[in-house]
Image 1 (cartoon, rainbow, N blue to C red):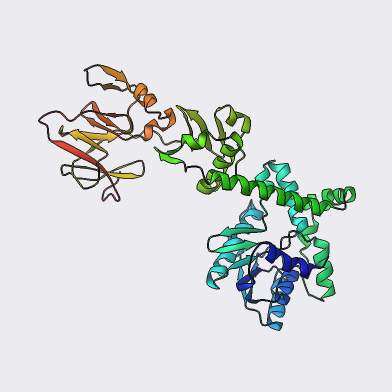
Image 2 (tube, rainbow, N blue to C red):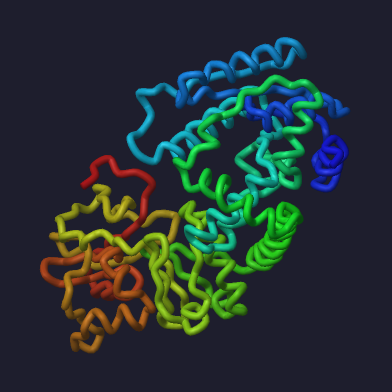
Length: 431
């Protein structure tokens, strides 16, 4: 394989112009040294930078820094370095913590140098290992395809230009060019699941199929095309509506083909909650409830609903005073005797003593004809799920409910001075 031609073709195929600022995440290993050298040789009007984080996970980790400093000094490349202090190393979850710290450092350097692209040296063997590892752990196709060639991270594009190149090809390139590099000895131990796959499983699979890496790349490309198709289609559907601590899915979105609804919801969950979930397509098609990633999805009164499984306890009723802002469920409200320019949430009679909070269970509400009805009937008629009803602001005059957000409001009594309920930006006093 001619890696130089493959690299040039990658940028052309992805529509990434070779201009601006390029930052290479360099570890001092053979993969990243090969990438750094390939980018240095690539023709184009761009500025190349390197960034290195010493994780201090091995006694000889400083050798990587020495190799990088020597290379960058030789070719006059700006090098940014930092260290992950041992005092910040967690007792468990070290691999994930190291990855998070490394990317935080890299994106900070990218911000400093105004990088257009952050390049990592993930290669075809990494892609295959990632597919296998996610297959073992979750079986979620989107997770199996989490190593994408190009993805947007804030103002910078995260680029992995070597996913179609095998580890062996990179090693051969590094040796041919006489590049100095440091091998991470922990890659050859069985201390992690990824290493065990690398040492024990992948060699067997490669014996079965010489085209294994090409097949992994093809799988990734097919999955990306499918994800892009559904993401584009889902992007044309109306956004979920915030609704009393949850999200109500518009009927136009919920009535789409079930596979599209699935992609729509999974994309929204990832965007809003930063969680990758795999919804059960059968439960979704049958409009049955399911819980994934701490979120509850159900179908109620013609809508899909999405909300956190853990909901706050009902808020007890507490006295509120006209003209003084009060706090409820993360929002500030004001009962005002003066009518403002914006439309009020409610208009109620000025009854004197008022209290606000969640509607107590079993509360019966007074109707216009003098009869009383169970609050659950009005909640159901308004299409508010049981789990979210405690998030509906209720106002009481003495022991009588005069307003329940979303489903109930007593009419202003004739001859009585009204109070206007508004949601305001800030509360001087909170509770």
